[in-house]
Image 1 (cartoon, helix red, strand yellow):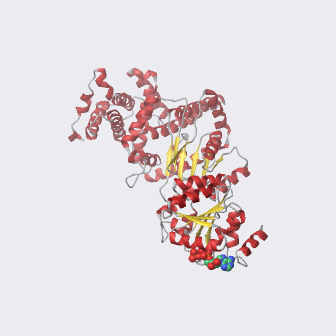
Image 2: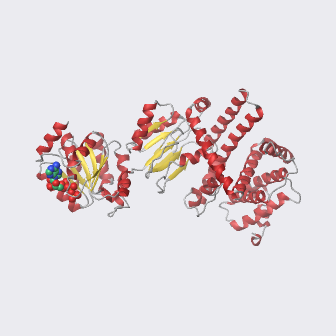
Image 3: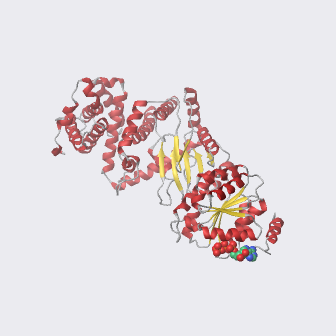
Length: 595
Ligand SMILES: Nc1ncnc2c1ncn2[C@@H]1O[C@H](COP(=O)(O)OP(=O)(O)OP(=O)(O)O)[C@@H](O)[C@H]1O
């Protein structure tokens, strides 16, 4: 190959390569991306021209200035390299001629200069995709690449959109060239945004990667079912920016430290909030805004619930000492219910997540879905509650502004059986346990340091939610006294073995009452959504209702029972009119001035 390179160089009138020209040209010919940093007049243009000449393919060169493009086109044409430029100043006829040329298999156009704006235009992209698919695209060069970086002296927003090259033309080598890039700018240029899609099952990770590739998004699967060498290769290619998307199980978690992860999508519900936190923590490590998208639906919830209950059965069968085994299993399910609560609660996600780890949000959140659009989230949750489980799903992931269907499949019991096998036996799950244990250890340390405070309120809140959930889930809960029994059962389970309180006498703390009022308020808000009730009235009503639950001498179990009943009532406030009951009585019960 080197003889050919030199022969080609000689053909262009040069005796030898300058600086790192040869390395840059070789990288492109081998299909690798590279950043070419050379001084002004150092000979950067030869780096993208020679690969096109030698392969007899087309190189697209993104350049910021039309005058500069015209100059380069005439220089190259003088040297016998067929070049042209495509931008808004060309006439319709000229552009049509260029596009026709691109469609021609025998086209001898070697260099096509475009502005970043025209590169992203659908008109040109359509033809470039054709050239790429036909295997006639040698590379895409980004000249004056410092314009990509907002740290650069010449930042140009349209350059930022060039990250779509990887999506549109997944395997084409990209060569970024500049003479003026500080270390910070260089880092920014090579950080092509990337994404991780987390799935519960290995097969789903494979499925997602295949599906993305079929849609033109370069992706690979990563899970514990792959051979070590394959896993290393995926990691290496992802780390070097050759593959922007990895679809992975939790095996792709600890130690993954890439600065430019802009999106983490959790396609299935994680088992714990620690798991969710661990997965989300792969994004935004450079401090730039990034997204963590968690998909929640009733199918997933039920499936995970089922998996956890099967695990419980298995552990029991194995003869684990029942007290210890039950406690561990119960903890597992409780942890999962916290994930569910995190999804369905109508409050700030960041506050909830931080509270779980004993921390408090120091600045107002303006990034989670709830804080961005409460009404929309409320509507979506109500919709979800109405719809219930679906048999067939199709999910839309949004990636760089273009939607694609990630996957859709049937969920039947045989699938669930496979699930259990894969979850119980694979090391992905072991990785997840390790990650969760580590996160829990850190959180415990932090909350110890923080002392009592909002975290204890959050814990109370969760306790109330879980009491209410069990109350509602149980058929027994239809009768008040039976519900009380059930909640007592829950109480006895949750109490620490050494200091188990005497049932019926455990006092109700102020923190619990505070959380109780919030719980009712949340239920009221949900049922009042769209009915024009003011929040301040609801808060007052919630206080009055909570006071009613507390009564004069409420013990904890009785209080919990009444509160669960009350929350259920509050949720059905919207249906009272139809049933001939007066929701208005509650609504008017408290005066705003009490709040
Ligand atoms: N290997 C080489 N041997 C001799 N001359 C070369 C070689 N490579 C490039 N040149 C010449 O060096 C000059 C500058 O090259 P080029 O325009 O590619 O520089 P550049 O790095 O793109 O500069 P700028 O940053 O100003 O755009 C040109 O006249 C070109 O012909």
